[in-house]
Length: 65
Image (cartoon, rainbow, N blue to C red):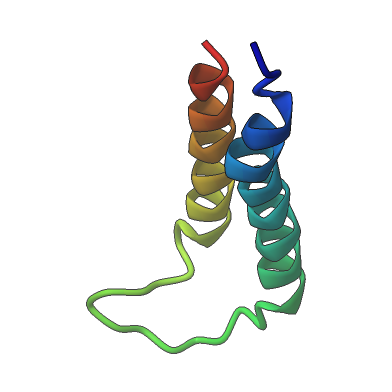
């Protein structure tokens, strides 16, 4: 039987790493402007990025089972 580790790395680990990198870049480049809209505010920006990274990690870990 072939090892599925290669496919796990491609389908779960790579997107998780890309999510972490893009989340860090997005957080660092976010200017924190005073623009207020109904859909996007600065109040929960860091929490939203952190939650996305956390959920991506959870999906990656559960896909290993």
